[in-house]
Length: 115
Image 1 (cartoon, rainbow, N blue to C red):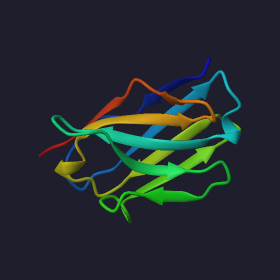
Image 2: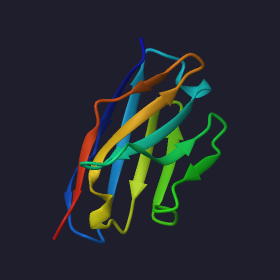
Image 3: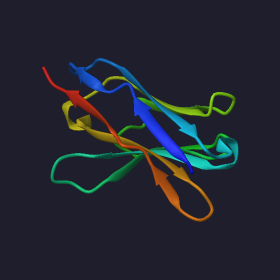
Image 4: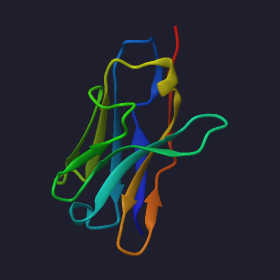
């Protein structure tokens, strides 16, 4: 059974950086596409960044140029480097593994950007 555990969230001031990590277990991590999503209070969950098994990336327009997704297949981990954070980036961030039969989600990690 695939399990995903996110870490790295916290409270930061506008303009600061955070790096989120998502450690996967229970599956062949390297063959699946991965993604980071976020959900702010009262809003729908949205895709933030995605990375294919071959390393191709895709970003939401709102984070392009500020966020970078990467993966380390040897460590079964996907990362989200978030720079120049804004208050509107405040949300719970979720990691997702897109397998061929279903999506697996982590429990989420809170990111709060506030002065």
